[in-house]
Amino acid sequence: MESNVHAACPKILSIATAVPPFKLRQQDISEVAARLFSAKHSDFSHYMPVYQNAAIDTRYSCVPLEWYERPCSFSERNALYIKNALDLLEEAAHKALERAELSFDDIDSLIVVSSSGIATPSLDALLMERLGLKRDMERLPVFGLGCCGGVIGLARAAQLAQARLQSITSTW
Image (cartoon, rainbow, N blue to C red; front, side, top):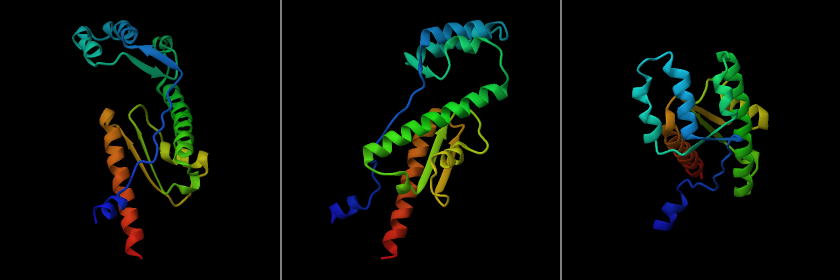
C-alpha cells in the first residue's frame, strides 16, 4: 500500500541552473555599495555588516560590477533585467527538460519565481511565448518575496502537480 502512496506523489525529475556571466565577490560588492550609498545616506555604515554576515562569498550578475556605478534609468535597468531573466530561464528550462528526457509539450504548468525586477507581461507569460509552450497551461508568477520565493514556488508547484494528479486519477 505504501508504494502506491509514493507513486501518486509529485516528484522532481530534474533540476537545472543558469547563472549570469559575471561572478562578483561579496567584498567588492560591499565596497561599491559603500561608495554609492554613503554619500546619500549618512548612516549607511550601520548597514555594512549585512554584507559580511550574509555568509555569501560570491554573487552573479548580468553586468560587471562597474556598471552599477554609472547612472541609468529604471526603465534601462528593468529592460536589462527582463532580457537576462528570460535568457537564463530559457537556458535552465532546456537543461532541466533534457535531463528529465521530456519536451516542452510535456509541460502543463509553469511557475516563475523572481525577486529582482518587474515584468508586465510577467516573465512566465514572456517565457511561454518565447518557448512556444501550450496556451492553456497553468501559470503562476511569484515575485517580491526575496529568497523565500523559491521555497514558496516549489510548494505551489507541488500543490499544482498534486491537484493535476488527483484530477487525472479521479476521472479513471
